[in-house]
Length: 76
Image 1: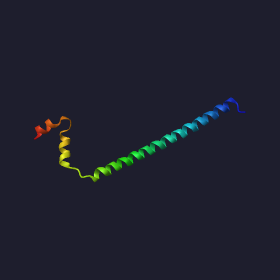
Image 2: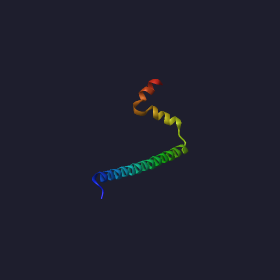
Image 3: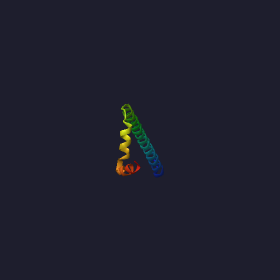
């Protein structure tokens, strides 16, 4: 049998190993999540670029966004 100090040391060592494994799992899960997010964004960009965009219509929409129409009228 171990004395109390040795048992406490073993428990602390096991706790350290447990926390290290848990942190490693968390990092792996977050890495996978970031990779999936990156791939989905790349896929979304690919879909958006395959469609032709009407630049003049988009520009007018941006100018009229959130009440900027008055400024556009003054500028014209």
